[in-house]
Image 1 (cartoon, rainbow, N blue to C red):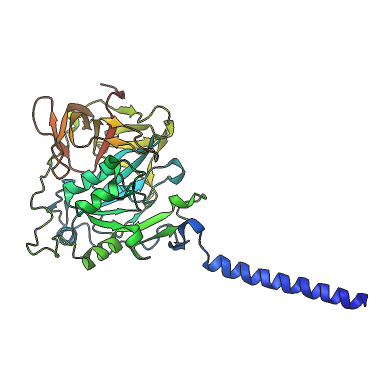
Image 2: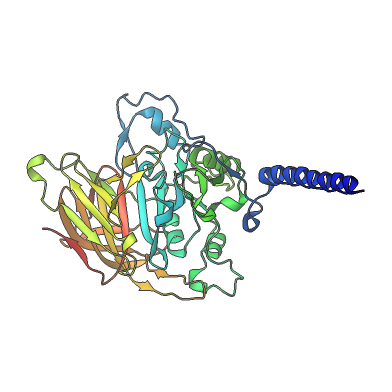
Length: 396
């Protein structure tokens, strides 16, 4: 009798172990975190499916980019001329760094999202044309960024955002999703895209990060979706088929200053919120390349896609009115429509002046104190939305 009980007991344990093992294997393969049950994940290589096509970029550079002023071979302009700019929300949480894709942006905007934590919006068009850029981590929309997307009539890639029109918990002034809908922005919200365009990339960095820091999107795949929706260089769903840049106002660009004309303003630093030193910014001027190297929270910034430092040719500190938090979600407001002071750093010099933007759909203009429109150097333009009244420190 005791032997039979022992046999039954051992048999029961064996069945339990077998059942547990099957459940573990099945669950590990198919179950997803309960808060994101509709989102697929992957642990592919860090660069994902981003691959550069085989273009000969040593060909004559005859075509000028309308966004960054740089010159490219015609094989590159042949690509961007079939598209419109792509605006992508790329977060800047300390846990998510290093980020992927910002070195391929023509223009980058940075502002606080909430709680003193900043967020970036890259405008991708010319520099990104020769490659399929991995963009990560992609995060949610904010109202003040949407009012910049409209300058370019751009595609807008993000992961949800602040406030649908009928959301009573979000202040009406902060409802980014409502603004997108009512103003018919060409929306590439990740929640409406397929797995190839955007998915959770869990091993992008060598550290474990929270789930919200893992969304990766791919520029070429986003453009394929845009083609299917009729959003090419023209809006094909509209009878007039007006090019995206029909009313676009180009900024002015110039050649770099000669070595003898370079200035000695080499160190720039400022904070968005004093309570968040991890998001303080400094730019170090490099006269050898006539560009500015970025540090965040005291650490040099690199693009994980190529492990190269972020080096902007132009840095604009645009002072804007800050309001908030304005609702239970701690949403902030930054007045990017209006006018205010600015400081432009280029050629080792600081140029003071003002900025103005009359509506969400008009181009932001930068004018020097002497009343002349700013001329940027050809290359990446980085625009920092700093709360008016904050101190900016730089040597003169």
